[in-house]
View 1 (cartoon, rainbow, N blue to C red):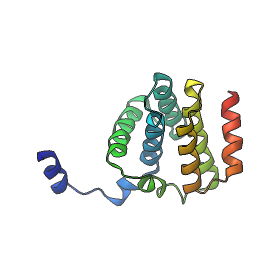
View 2: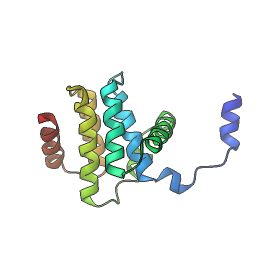
View 3: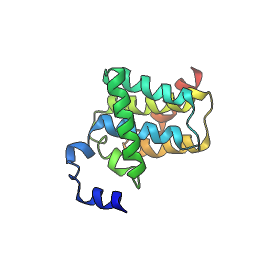
Length: 143
């Protein structure tokens, strides 16, 4: 109860916090890794390396980003707060986000139906076509 009151009176999130693409992508990847009920080491590593490579950030920074993304994901009721930060990105960047999602899905060499469904929903929300999503899935599945 005390935690709930503390959050109520804490400094409110700024729009920059809520709509930060790095944080949004990290939160989606964290959620994706857990959507099938367990987060495997391979998935954790895939998230870490995808974020480091794509955003060009160092290991300590990516660890902090993942920790914050995990916290934000636990507080979220839907994907909107994350996808709204990504819809205005150029198409090339949105394709890269979907590619990262598939990297996480196939990190453990399996494509669980809940993971597949989540990638489909996120791709739709950020306006990546079914064709592009499928092409990326096939590329990542091959290795």
